[in-house]
Picture 1 (cartoon, rainbow, N blue to C red):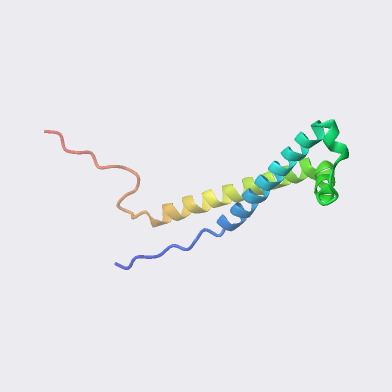
Picture 2: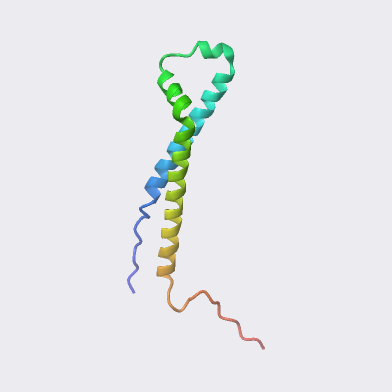
Length: 104
């Protein structure tokens, strides 16, 4: 009997990208929120990260919600694909019912 090698789930890559993007956005949004709480630091903002702070200030919540939606869809698709593959690879003799041992 030949052993079939399963291919990698195609939804793992989008799941990984969406997860990393959400983690980075959430951390940046949290840092921005903490920095905005300090009144002395708000005026001393560097110009290097102004574009990021401005973007997160305007679109941060929307970006995180969109990333969460993509993350949920990719996770559901990956789980569903794994479930279908596991169901297909089950042999017909193991249909989910365990054989009962004979009692003496």
